[in-house]
Image 1: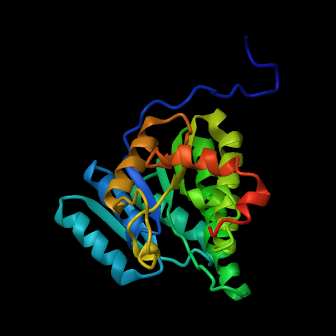
Image 2: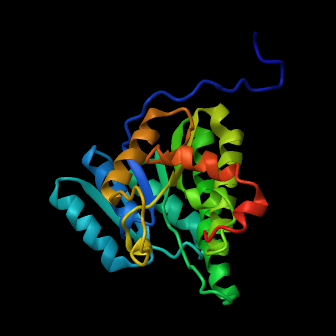
Length: 264
C-alpha cells in the first residue's frame, strides 16, 4: 500500500548486521569505553575518542594507531551540554560522516550509611542521564536524516530496582534505560539501531572497591559482547553477560516490602 498523499513512508524493518566505518565513543579514556574504541578500530573503523582526560585519551589513541588503526581525540566534559553540538558536528565532519555512537561515560557514587550528598547525586544525573540525552539526541537526529546508524548506550543492571546502597546511581541508570527505550521507539522505524546495554559486574576502577563481584568479566570481554549486540541490529536491550537477564527477572519480581529488607 502506498503512503497517503502528503506523508512520507518510513522504513520499519530491523537494520541488517552492520560494519562500522566511522564511530564516536564518548567516555573512551578507560574501562569499557576504551576497549570498545580499540575493538571498533581493529575492525577497520575510524574512531573519535571523547572524554575529559586528554592524556588518557591520547594513550588509547596511541594504542589504536600502534595496532594499525585510526583514531582522533576530542577532550570534552559531557556536562558541558552547550558544547555537544559543536563537538559532535566537528568530529562527524572530520571523519566524513558517522554510523556509530557509543555513550559510555558514567559517574558512580555509593554513599555511606546516613550520608546524603546532593552534589554527588546531581553529578550522576548530569553525567549518566543528561549527558547521555545530549549526545544521543544529536546522533538520533543525524541517523534519522540519513536513515541508518547505530546508537549504543551503556546503562546497568543496577537500574532494574532502587537499591538502598546506591540510590542516586540506580535512579540514574533507570532513567537512562527508559530514555534509550523511548529513543528506540521513536527512531527505530527509520532504520536506526538503538542498543541498550545493561552490564553486570565489570572489572573496572568503579568496581574495584567491591568485595563481591559475582560473574565479573573484563572490560575487553564486555566490549566484545557489546559490539556483538550492536552489529547484530534489531535495536535490542541486552544484559552483559546474558546470565544477568535471569537475575534481573528475579529481582524485578521481588515484592517491594521484601526487597526493602535486602542489603542491596
